Image: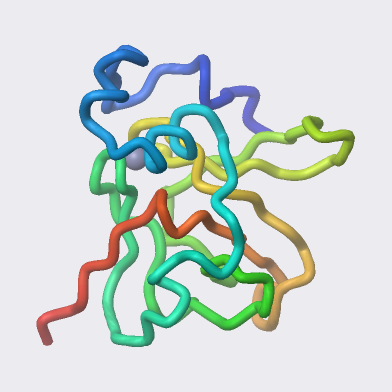
Length: 140
Ligand SMILES: [Zn+2]
């Protein structure tokens, strides 16, 4: 387990908290920089079924492929795999639960949590805040 958390560590893209607040929309800022969780079933990305790539809303880092997206029924966009070297994980003991927090490797922005009850082939479920992601349809 990496020991880097979203609040420490050195990232390729860094801004002060005040700068992030200016750069991001309020709900993006709350999630990416302060680990807020968006209300379930609110993300437009839940219904996104076109081929393409999901990227970090904070730094544009490509995070997930549409080929690994699935409907988990949880109300948050879910993926069974991330792109290679796209995200990092940290054990998160907040809210009295043991969870694995998922963050962007490029800017350290909080994306969501990782669970081990996903579908094959990985058995993983990346439970993401849609507000922390942007979708880029593939042009092919
Ligand atoms: Zn990022």
